Amino acid sequence: MASMATTLFVKTSFPSHHLSKTFDTHFAPSSKVNIFGGAKARTHQGLRVSSGLIEPDGGKLVELVVKDSERDLKKGEAFSLPRIKLSRIDLEWVHVLSEGWASPLNGFMKESEFLQTLHFNSIRLNDGSVVNMSLPIVLAIDDSQKHRIGDSKKVALFDSLGNPIAILNNIEIYKHPKEERIARTWGTTAPGLPYVEEAISKAGNWLIGGDLEVIEPIKYHDGLDHFRLSPAELRDEFKKRNADAVFAFQLRNPVHNGHALLMTDTRKRLLDMGYKNPVLLLHPLGGYTKADDVPLDWRMKQHEKVLEDGVLDPETTVVSIFPSPMHYAGPTESKFNDAQVAITCEHDNLSD
Image (cartoon, rainbow, N blue to C red; front, side, top):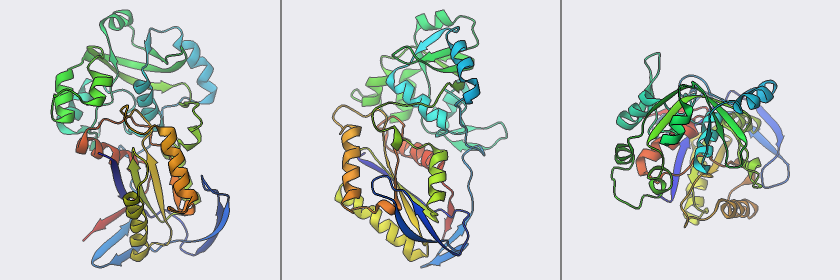
């Protein structure tokens, strides 16, 4: 799957009168633009669009980074607990969880959540509501790690350099049914699945779930962290730009002409529908990708050039890295990614 496209029709709570607003783009100097709010409802060729705020799954954005005032205390606690060393993909999942991309999850899945995800592509919340969750977000450990944890109810998660990343509370350890996980996620157990070979086949035979307390925001120090906007930061950015619609395009490849045509045509169609300031979220995937994919840093340079050359308008485009690892799991993954992108936005509802 070369790319993933999501269109999110959005009406944010801005005044409907004319506004002038100055804002910064990621790839161009600040400029003065005229922005207009939109009406509460629009019709277009038999399509009715009605506005309404949709909250993140579960009713709120679940952010798991501890307060600044608690950071030193949590670091000290981490050094006193049994340790689990995180792989690069594990760290990326901590990032996804920490910023609320996987709301309403409070941490790595416990067994009930894991099994619901595998069998139903969703999880049931305490209030009886059901939310989309088509990919398991789990942390694997081996026999020796399980033995070291013993009866502890908490563990500390460390990165490969020995830095404390998070504390996992109220832990539950359960069997890692690798074959079932692979079959239900990919629809096959055939060899050669990139994510399986990288993150599952050689992983431990146990999974550990629990509630995460992330000690500080996840940073990669690769020169691209300023592109990694959290869901909360993206919402703020859309409000800053007075967007009355947001449409998102996720991809793990460079932007090509077909992508650009799709994105520019979508904006034109939104304008034709009566929206005044549709904003594009260009959302390159920044987590694990297979070895023969174009590396993230080169993709970001290409995205920069696309905006510099005016193929996409930098004044109506937000570029933000999507931190999730890539599963290459077809529609199962697309459903998950759609839900993650929706967390950043306020929707309109579309009906015939």
